[in-house]
Amino acid sequence: MQGELGGFSYSVQRLACGTSVVSAAGDLDGETHSRMYRLVTDEVAREPSQLILDMSGVTSADDAALEALMEASALAGESDISFCLVAPATNPIVTTLAAAELIERFEVFPTLGEAQRHASRSGGRSVCDGDSPNN
Figure 1: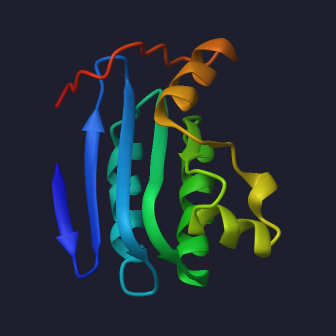
Figure 2: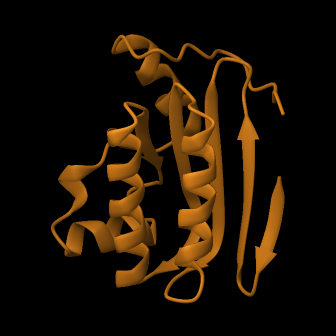
Figure 3: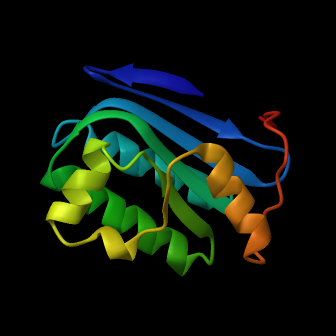
């Protein structure tokens, strides 16, 4: 699934191993954060073993974006779904989370591959070596 909303675009990839990857690009802000949260809600309802939010394409983030990420993390936790973010250290999501002193509440990986490998190393239910979608 893919879509666009103003300066925000997204895609959802469901991998055969039970991992859902929600990717976002562009501005994650007061106008677009609700779409991001709905995507997460829809994926949590599918009960994946792991939910990865790939934020590496996000170019700006505000307080509404942080609130959406906090809610997404809580929702995944309530459903016992492994949850993490993908974003390089200089990404606006990482810098905004750090500035708000919220970064320690998230597992953040610089690449999607590292996020997937971490789940298998840490005993997570998701073991996914490939990237073939299972839509």
